[in-house]
Length: 154
Image 1: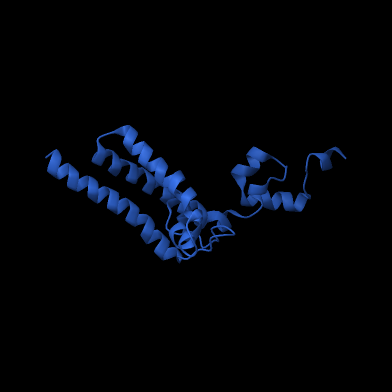
Image 2: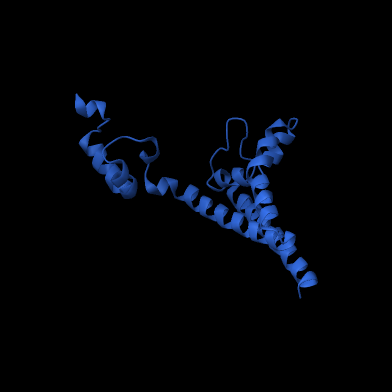
């Protein structure tokens, strides 16, 4: 009774989870938690996409910081790219909300992993194109930073 209340799993399934997700199993123990249901290999593309996204976001912040010479402006611009613009995209008229939403930074990670963005936004970009768009964000920001740095500070 107490084990059922704690959400204990069947011992064979529990051992399989321990093998597939050692870190989350150490943290969550025997309890069934929604995020440790699949194997590590299933979530690897999403994990790598997230790592790439955070790296690109840092490079965009660096580029905007060099261009504006202001930490506050760079942080505000990155927050706008990450939270404000993706929040506005669904309110654009059809079909532009889906087209523009697919190119937003937070929506690129599921597309890199080949997953569906949401119930309203189907992934329009194949994984390779989503990686290219993500790299384009960093490339544009760093190219602008390089040009501004060469003209202004050199």
